[in-house]
Image (cartoon, rainbow, N blue to C red; front, side, top):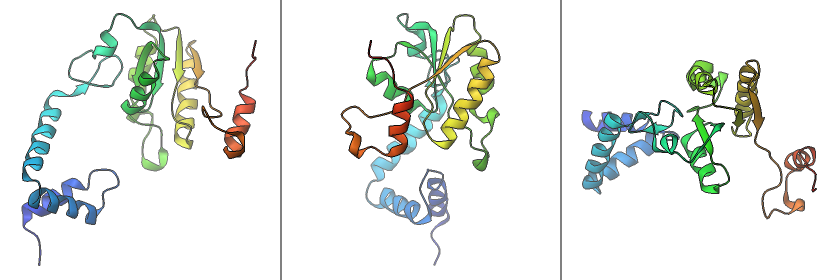
Length: 199
């Protein structure tokens, strides 16, 4: 016996979410229709609203309801620094540290040839324009330390360095409060390589 066409369409739509397969999508659809119709209505309304009003900031490429997002529009940021991150969640984590007061650029992804994600898919043309606006003195690459993140950092570094821009990369090493005996050898080796003078 088949499900009603509208239910099948809902299940198929839910499968666009990362990590959601056919069974998970069916369970979600059943839950929304049977147990939380009000929540389903709010979800549909919120999703429709977000699709209408949320786009990308013209400067940092992060999600925004305005052409220039509040962070880029703030007058107290250091316009000479540009930190490049993969996703909005990375930007949020860096902001929580309160250790960085410069500007950002969000790639909205990372290079991944196996997944069909190339340079055009991560807004490198927009990044290049932003980095060469005459105000940026240093570009800080804060992509993840994954194979794809490293490849992205290398590609962006080559792209920007060839145009005379100063490019740096966030450091990696031992976590705060971490004990050496519990750290993997790759992280420990990197911490040794990226050591710095105490004075």
